Figure 1: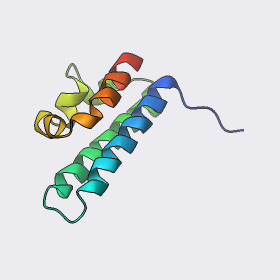
Figure 2 (figure 1 turned 90 degrees about the vertical axis):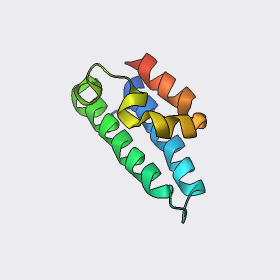
Figure 3 (figure 1 turned 60 degrees about the vertical axis):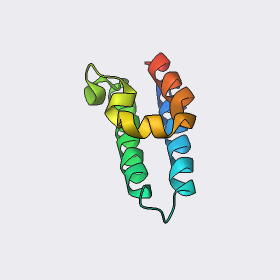
Length: 90
């Protein structure tokens, strides 16, 4: 029997989907490499949420935006609601 994702895992998954959308829009452009790196970092958040039930092991005392990269987040404000949801699910 498969288990349902926790609210934290679901929020991390939605953030990944939002980042993937941004990455897809940038496909073939030089900035797509940065978005791909951010997507991998978001997967680290999901893995921490799944394994530990918390993302603090990855973010430390910092925010999700800081962990992903403030500059990238500021350039992609569409992901902000998903970051807020993830932080509130913490």
